[in-house]
Length: 398
Image (cartoon, rainbow, N blue to C red; front, top):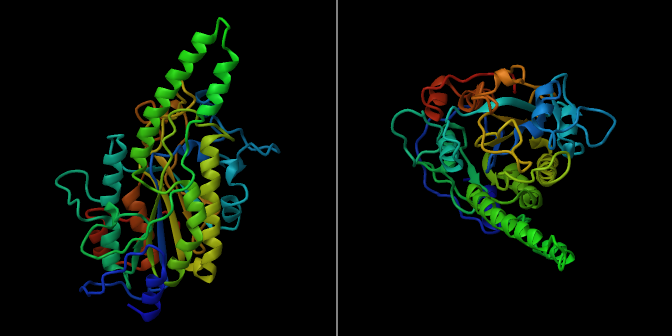
């Protein structure tokens, strides 16, 4: 390790120092300057609110309460990307300028062919990056295997513990982030409303309604906490983004951070509300990261993924449930941005997967294999060691 890198690591707060021993690996050439950060949104974020299918009438029929309006002069409407897609208005001042500057792209209908719809199983499946059939090695994550073939292979997990994605032969350090901004139920407001109805015929119904709501929210909160796996909140990521950028800019070429709080079964909101606030916080953090990287941003790629998308139709609680296909964000100074890329199709009932979800047309290992091949100059053999049995697919991101 370079002396500068060692000092940077030693001075970082709550940092676990990297393994100082050596290991013999086949490295790609001339790639020391390239950097890759994977941002994992744990909980299955609603891709149809982020990347809005504005040309689909079926979308607006399916989401009478939470749909994002078609682009217009109204500041709560979708931001125009092309004739078929718009961007959530919460990202107007952060990600949208990057898109217009050619430094952000989106890949709809993306994800894994894993069909469990379980947060934990699908998260593990994606992080391992191994074939769905046959035995899996739970001590071998795909970013650990990537670190073994990328020149320098200097990786960092911005997590409290080493995630599955970085498990493996290469010793990877980690540094935890502050968990800030966890959502909670406002019991004080519920109590005020209940007292307003005391001594009225509705008193019993109001009290019972709040009791049921409280129980449901406790259960959903427990599920969301579990799905997040102790990941930092979106607000926490926003506040820590500069520290992540400084470490990635000066010392590390591979990074991973997970952000929790995306399991929106109830009260998801549309242009405003819970999900909009999380997207705003995430966008602020990503924009700050891009700025702090400075000249290194030109050699940086940031990929934002989630374990799955959510149901296309809203549920009875004005939220969405576990789905399948998602949409990936790809940011960076070297990205061929200002585009919505990958295999696509019309968004209508006939094209839904199992009549409920976006299908997966852009399998994540093939897409990432194409990105790694372009960014790090990896050979076919090296790509196969990262994603066994998968042919990389270059969809024009880099």
